[in-house]
Length: 94
Image (tube, rainbow, N blue to C red; front, side, top):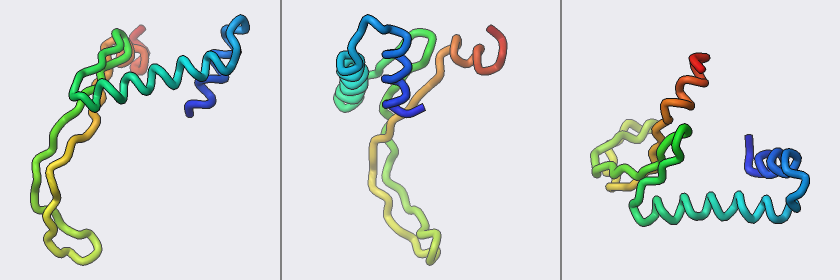
């Protein structure tokens, strides 16, 4: 599912809301998650999962084309851990 499909689905399920308002709400939620993660905060959506940022240390990697050793800099990467409810629903337990 892409963002526009999510907005369309929410709009269809809530005919009393204007599509532009639904779009603004969805964009605001995503922006707040991004802003929190940028600050290094953890974002938890109960039953769904938690978004956090993990730090990867610098290391020596390999260029897959040439096999040459290259230095890979330290970086921060987004991490998502599923919640129990989501995991159970995916596995047919709920």
